[in-house]
Image 1 (cartoon, rainbow, N blue to C red):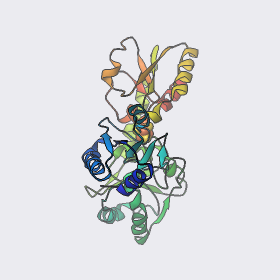
Image 2: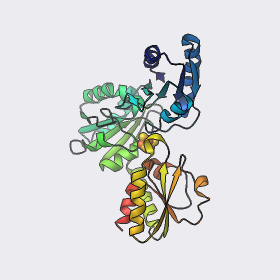
Image 3: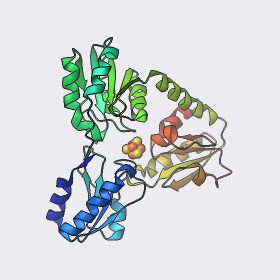
Image 4: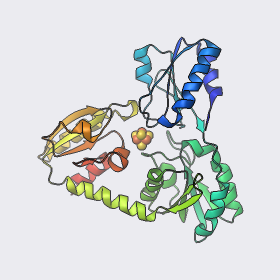
Amino acid sequence: MKIDEGRVVEEIRRVKPRLVLLSCPEGYLRQVEDLASRLEREFGVETMVSADLCYGVCDTADLEALKLGADLAFHIGHRSGFTRIGERTVMVDVFDDADFSKVIEKAVALLKPYRRLGLCTISQHLHSLDSAKGLLESAGFEVYVGKGHERLLDGQVMGCRFTTSFSIRGEVDALVFLGQSRFHAVGVALSSGKSTFMLDPYSETVEDMGVQAEQWGKRTVLQIYKAVDAKRFGVIVGLRDGQMLSAQAVHLKKRFQKHGREARLITLREVTEERLAPFRDLDAFIQTACPRISIDGSVFSRPVLSTPQAEALFGI
Ligand code: SF4
């Protein structure tokens, strides 16, 4: 993994901050700690490293930086169409140097039945898209990469945004996801309705996501049906910067009330079984924070539906 340190240094030289806050996903913490101590030595700047969980581009530490009096916040590791977020957050890319050539070589035989392929990936592999496209084209495939949209760059998917793969579903016979995230690969399969293959450069394996997508799809529907008889709902507003959809939560609460159910608003940073346990009188929850929580998150004893699942529930 390589952090785009040039971007960090450029901003430090420009802003000349007294205090900077650095946040990143857990897996990068050691590298970020090392970067922080080098920044202190080389630029005489005070640094703080956020050890809080950091989930995505929705989860910057902009407000924390403001409260701490930091002049800059570096959000490291979630590349997107945004280069800055909020008043003081600078987005810093991390590049994974994984090599896709071997796994692409293995995938060619399996992908033969599909002539036209759509290619997508997550932020840390975006720089590998062009070379992967070239390799697949040399093997005789027609390869398409979906155009970036809003916060998504060309070919990029996020756990809550699959516009780039969805937009090319009519032009391709199958989709190829580069990386090692079943959650994202299944999301590509479910949102596009196309055969989807995950090419994992670390294990050098090619996985057809069909069976898993079907299982996840069924699980999603099952959760909705489990909430059908619920009388009292907790509607959760996420407190992470980009997940704070309070207007949407208030709207959902009113709709539940119109449908003759009780509904109450709850705010949470971490939506876990433990945090929901004290709300014993509630039968089910809707969380407006992040779709991943309902699909891939903790195991909940009561239904915890995402907003699209809640929409489906209203339709039953
Ligand atoms: S999937 Fe969830 S964590 Fe990832 S960007 Fe979307 S809201 Fe944030």
